[in-house]
Length: 228
Image (tube, rainbow, N blue to C red):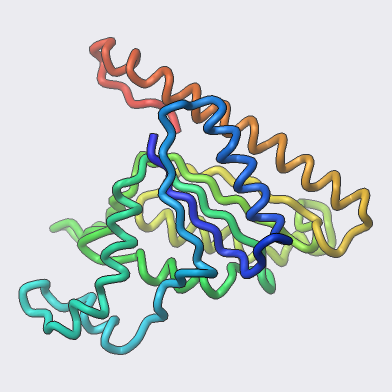
C-alpha cells in the first residue's frame, strides 16, 4: 500500500499532530511490510496560494494554456498526481482558530482541480476522482470540542474537510481528534493524547487487515473491493 502522508503543523519537535502521525505510520509499518510512504511537509514545502493567473489557467483548455499558465499550474499538477497515485491518505494538522491551518487551505485550493480531481459529467453531475482511497484526518485541538462541551458548536474544521474532500471523491474518511491538548490540565492533555494513540492503533490495524484480505477477495471471483 502506498500512503501519502501530509503534515501541516508549523511546529516541528513540539508538534502533537506530527508525533501522532508518526505513531500511526509506525503502527502501519508494524502491520504492513509492503507499506511505502510519500511524505509532504507543508511547513517546508507549502502549496502556492491561488493567484489570478492560476485561477484563469485552471479553466483554460490544456492545449490553449500559455507557458506561464503551465508553469503556475505545475506545483498543483504534481500534488494532484501524488494524491491520485496513493492508495491511502493521511492528513495531520492542528486546528487553527476553529478551522484548518492556512498552509493546508492553500493545499486544498491546489488539489481541487477540474478535469483532474473532479470531473463534470455530460448531465451536469460533479464526480470526484479520489474515490476508494482510505483517508485519515488526524487533528489536534487546543480546546475540547466533543459533544456536550461549551465549544462543541465551534468546530469549523471537520465539516470543511468533509466538504472539500467529499467533492473530490473521498466519501468515508476517518477522523481522529486529539482534544483538548492546550487549554487543559496536564492530566486531561495526557488522556487526550493517549485516546488518540489508541484510536490510531485501531485504524492502522483495520487498514492493514483490509489490505491483507484484499487479494483473497479479489480472487474469489466476485470482484468486491476491500472496505475502506
